[in-house]
Image 1 (cartoon, one colour):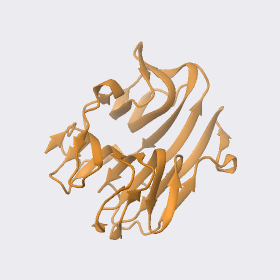
Image 2 (image 1 turned 30 degrees about the horizontal axis):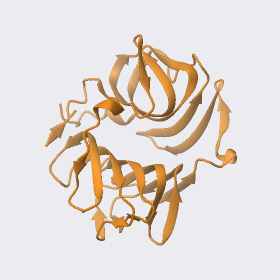
Image 3 (image 1 turned 90 degrees about the horizontal axis):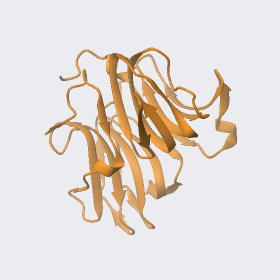
Amino acid sequence: MRINADFKRRAIIEPGHYHWASSPQSGVERVMLDRVGAEKARATSIVRYAPDSSFTPHPHPGGEEILVLSGTFSEGGADYPAGWYLRNPPGSSHQPSSREGSVIFVKLQQMSANERDYVRIDTRDPAAWHQQAGREVCPLFSSLTEHVCLIRLAPGNVPFNGAVNGAELLLMSGSLILDGQTYESGSWMRFPVDDSASIHAGAQGAVLYLKTGHLADTTLEA
C-alpha cells in the first residue's frame, strides 16, 4: 500500500478529507496520512479508539511515536490523557487500549535503529515550555537526524523561514495560512526538502506538532 509515498512532493490532508478505515482490531479506526507497506508499514496515521477498545500485545521493531490528541490512551499499566507525547524505541512491544476512548497521532517504523530510550512528556506542564525566537516551544525529541517539538504561534507568526529541510506538522488548534489558503485544526502537512512554504498562523494563533530533518534521508521512497 502506498499513500503519499513520494517524499519529494508536498502532501496535505485536511480534516474534512479524513477517510476513517477499520484496523485489524475491532473498535479501532485510522486515517492513513502516509504509508509505505502493507499492515506492517512505515506509516503516519491518526488513530481513533472507541471506549473499552484495545489491541492484543504486539511488537514495534521499527519503533513508535505517539501524541495523544484527545481522550486517554493507555499502555503498560499507565494512562496518558490528551497532551502526552510518547516514544517507544525499536524492538519495544506493548498492548495499547483506551477505557474512555481516545484519538492519537502515530508514526511507525520511522526511528533510527540505535534509538534505545523511552520518552514520556506531559506537554500540559508549563515547565515543559520555553521561549525560543519569539515563540513558545515544547521540545519533545532531538537527534542528529530529526527534531520534534510543539510550537505555540502568535497570530501572523511563522513556524519556519525560507527553504525547509524537510518538515511535517499537525495543526492541533487555531489555523494556519499557507500560500493564501486557510487550514483549520486537524490539518496535516508534509513539506519536502528545499520546499519554500509561505506559511503563518491565522488570526487566533496556532499550536502545532512539528518534526524537521527526518525527510533528508535519501533512501525514502519516491
